[in-house]
Image: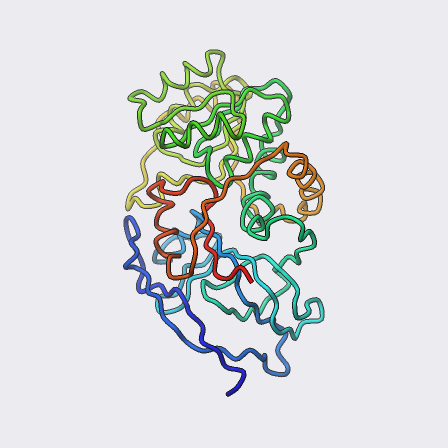
Length: 344
């Protein structure tokens, strides 16, 4: 048929345990009809940018425990956040040519059967790839976790783990704009330098070079930590609990150190939650998307005025998507990991 085109896809071969490998995924080619059937309510999109995010690791595992998001199905394309262009629409809210961001398949073309979950891109004067990061899910995650969950105050001390990642780099900058003292941890000298020179953190350290995380935190926070933005878990969380101040807050965004372990590490210092009256709260960005217009209203002027900067690690071509995703779990990316499918 004239409307059929080839559609390159990233397929999950089978469920994964331990650290994922590129060989757990397969690049294959199918075909897709560029015209949706009559009676459907979906949209057909051409994917332009795909987002590599740590939460995708959980979706590669067998659905043995309850989760907020379904596992991928072996033999089918994996999915995640992306930026796309509408090619055909049977939905009254979308037209051909619209640019959108939201959940999409890791493939060149996707049929989105629930387009109500897509966000239409209005501000096209900023890089479209930003909608996989600062203007998309990671940006909203940083905004909700920092302002809504942690309720920061001017002059407080703030610690951010995985601070050079898609979310952490923003949390640190939000904290600096509020007049907080901010320290971040990362896993290489390059990332530590980036935190201080590019993102304006007051201090930063390479956790891989610290034999005693408790001592490292005491070095940077002699008076203790008011607010911890948690991206790592494990030994880092244990050390932070020892260094929190009375009535401190911990916003739990993720725990990337635990995602590839068959048996998660325990946390030993939880009694400090009681002793110091600490509030520790987990959150999901999905519960906060009603704040998205308010978030854009705040962050877009900051970007345009140069008060917030954003670093991306861009990989070209869907063929390189598996290695880009795997790289997250080895700390290979510097900044937000993005895969370019088509720059249109």
